[in-house]
View 1: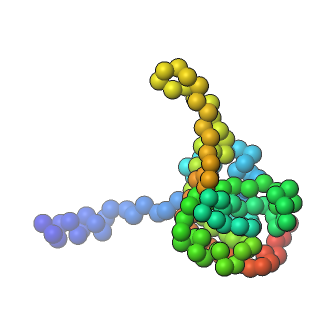
View 2 (view 1 turned 45 degrees about the vertical axis):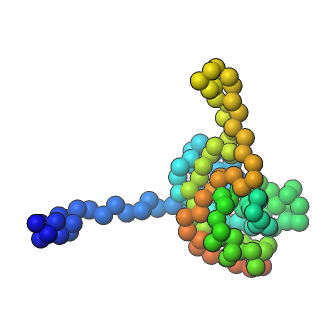
View 3 (view 1 turned 60 degrees about the vertical axis):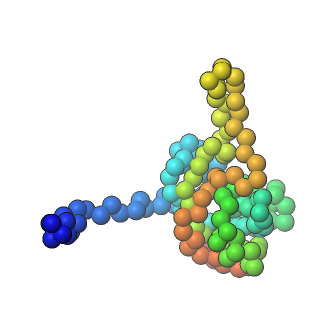
Length: 144
């Protein structure tokens, strides 16, 4: 019986993890439904990362206007512990996208009332799957 199970285990194909989609903060914000549930590879700047707010921005900047578009990073104690001593820092990671808070939806509940999805604190726009690199304080050269 055990021998038969071992033989089946050798024959059964192993599902490969899906390859992350390389994209940008701006692309996800422009079309969040396209990326919803997908694993993406993204890079940008994390300026602050606190218990209630942590986000990845398009650029380095002293103000939100200078830093450009952003996405919230879901609460992740391991990620926080790694990046906090290096802030502000340039990061690259793979993450699963949840479009719920990026593109708030108006839905109807079972009583016919309209409900608007509103997210506060560390919305799970991006849930870290794999932290690929942290570079502080300057990002690597990027070819255009």
